[in-house]
Image 1: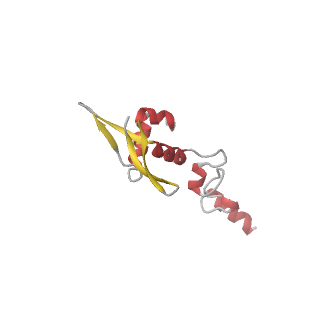
Image 2: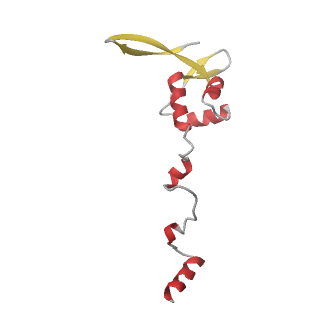
Length: 120
């Protein structure tokens, strides 16, 4: 199995190291991802961060990921129990109706009821 060479400095001496490469089938198990297709879609959506490395055999090309890339993908896809990726996208925790934040009602049926209650 091939590898990616990188320079590493220890005690002021530059060493040349070889980072192991893993096929997408193995990387799918290490990350973990639901399927190889899910990993390919993730890599397609983040192609700037994860450039392709391929090994060509006679009939097809096989893509490989370096160990550092696998670790980075794990960090990007895993989150703790208290951190919901959906709540962070919405900017709020929990699920509430969109028109009724903090007791405020914007429009529709409930807005009319609230307006009538405030008018009385």
